[in-house]
Length: 357
Image 1 (cartoon, rainbow, N blue to C red):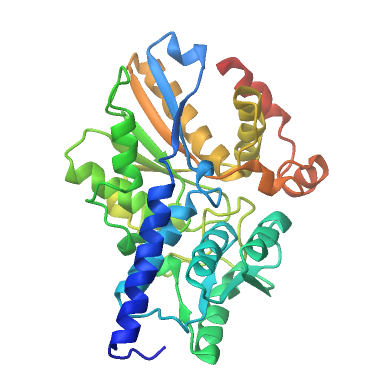
Image 2: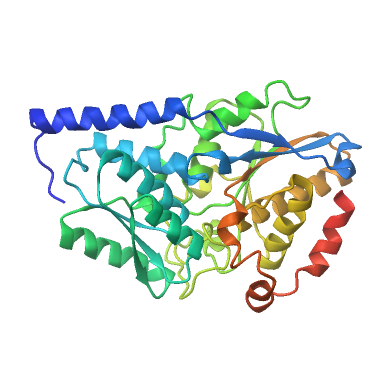
């Protein structure tokens, strides 16, 4: 869209929009930090925590990103009272952006793959957003740009702006929250934080914050199958692409996204989809509620690290994210027939995970 000088009316609207977003922040408490009760590790002084991002008003980690992207767009002069907001998403970011668009009285269109979970589409629409479908996940970018041009709207482009919209030095980002909440635990500075990148914005925020505060914590990124991030991390080849997306919604990408910053990551692993899905099924028995499949990717990576620490006789804490609720995936990752057809047999991994209880 064309940038215009800030008239008095436009500036007043922008200030009011920012006030509404900041007021919304003040009405929302910080998310919980859950300590998992896993005797297998606790007996050797290894503690595991989940930062529960499902308790945001829109139910996922992406609530933080959407808020930052709106503030970034407002302060850059890209969004005004007549702007149509367009976003490329696999669902969760679109839900959160629809929430903020409704808060500001703006039209919102989410460009999503047709395979996006039905529950996510319903939630986008619940907040007044519109879903615009494409056949494949790699088609969302061009279609979002086309719509923005056609409607003279603003393409939020989370995959480009996620790493710069959040102030990683400030006292209101997720990394600062984790370290503040860990303050009184027996190992307050985590040995590892584990994060699965979708845009790469959260891993960039956490990795930068760790270095800025000179913590000894290491950051491991975990990638699902059918994603290029891990291969890019190993090779540095930014031209990598895939002609299909993955089965773990919200994480992994078929191309290298501008917001993915490999230099802040200490280690990276690919987690098999069958292990990701089995882990959230196992986790339900511990928490008494469902978490989304990306949480399984995160937690399986943590368990791998914890086993390595135990084998070396190391003590410490590990933190990862519970990214969203599993209620969004009742028709997919928590449906036995869908899992059998799309993921495979999760029972061998479930048998492996039993030893941690």
